[in-house]
Length: 471
Ligand SMILES: Cc1ncc(COP(=O)(O)O)c(C=O)c1O
Picture 1 (cartoon, rainbow, N blue to C red):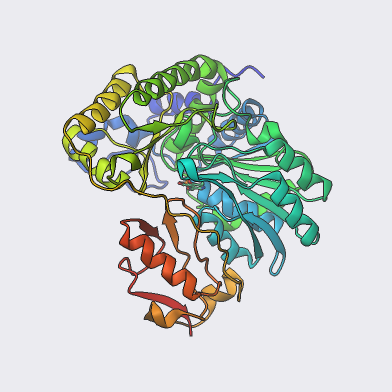
Picture 2 (tube, helix red, strand yellow):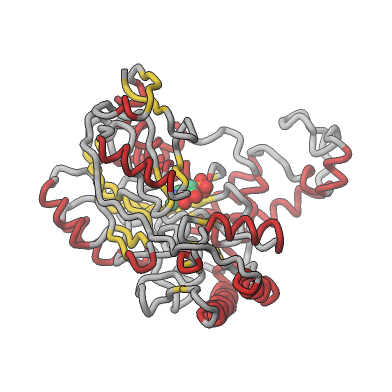
C-alpha cells in the first residue's frame, strides 16, 4: 500500500470546513460553547475536530487501521484511545478464560495484573534475568520459558514485556518459536516498542519476531498523542473476533478523534520517514553515551554490553556518585529543567525519540557535568538491591481482588494473602503480586528497600506501615 495518504487527517481537513447545525455530541458543539480561555490557549481547530464517531468517519478509520497493519507488519490493527493498558487487557481477555493458566513475565505492567483480574486467568509468573553490574532487568530468557512450558504444558498463552522500561528486548524470535512449538500464542506488551522495525540498528519488532498479539503505545515512542496506542494481530493462533469481543467490553463508545488522527499521522511518519528520523535519534543517543562515559564515575551501557538493547533508551548509572537517582532527578528538574523519564535508586532512565534535538542532548550532558562539578557527590556508593523471590500464589488475582479485604500492619500481614501488588524500583519487578502470600522475607525486603530510599509502586499506604490483605 502507498503509505503517503493519511485518511483520518484528510477526513479532518474536510470536516474543518463543514458548517453544520450540530445536534450530536459532544455538547460544546465544535467549540461554540467551549471556555474561551481554553480555546485561546489551544486554538479553535482542536474543538472543531473534537467529533464523535460520525458515519462518514467509519471508512477512513478502517483504512487508517489497514495502513497501520501494513506499516507495522501485522495482519490486522485496532486503534486504541485508552492506551496500551486497554490493549494488554484485551490480549488477556481474548486468550484466557477463568482458571486458564497463562505464563507471564514477572516484570509485567500493572495493566496486565488488571487484565488477570478481569479475565480470571491463573498467572504462572516467569522469573526474569538480572544483570547486577547495571542493576538491570533483562526480561525472560528463552531457556526460562522452555522450562516453564514443560512444567505447564496446559498454559493457554505466554505474555511478555518487550522492550522493558530500560529498552531491553530479549530474544523474542526464539521465544516466539518456543511458544509456537507448544501450540500457544505469544502476546507481547510492546508499549515501549512502536518505533522498532523502522531502523536496522534497532532490535527487531515483536511482530517481526513472530508474536501473535502485540500492543504498542504509539504515543510513547512513535509520535502520536498521549493515550493513543495500536493493538496488532498476526497469524491465526488468535481469532480476530475474540479481540473484537474483548475490545467491546473494554473500550469507550466515544473514542477521541484527535487521538485517532494522531495515530494515522504517526503511522505515516514512521512508514515514510522513520528510518531517517531514527538514524538521527540513534546518532544523538550514541553521542550522548560517549560524552557521558567520559564523566568521572558515570556509567552507561550500549548494545556491546546488552545486545538486544534499544539504544534510544539511555540508562545512566549514578550509584558510584553516592547519591540516588531520585536526588539527581530532583536536582536536574529543579535547577536545570532537564527531565528524565524515570529515576530509580541507582539510575536515571532517559527516553530519546524522534522528537529530541541536539540542544536537548547538549543540555543533558551539561547537566551531568554540572552535577559532578558542583560537588554533589554524596557519601557511600549505592549498592543495587537484588532479590530473587516469587512468593507462593494462594488465590488468583481475580479471587483476591473480589475477596473481603482488611488493612493490617505490615508485620501482621506475614502469612496472609496480599490484595496489593507491590513493585519496587529498581528493578521494577513486583516483589509480591495480588493473590500471593506475604512472607517474612517479603516484609524484610520491603523494609530494606524503603530504608535505602527506594520507591515501591502499587502500595495503597505509601509509608507501607499497613497493607491490604484478604480477611
Ligand atoms: C510495559 C508497559 N506496558 C503497558 C503500559 C501502559 O501503557 P499506556 O500508558 O499506553 O496505557 C506501560 C506504561 O507505562 C508500560 O510501561
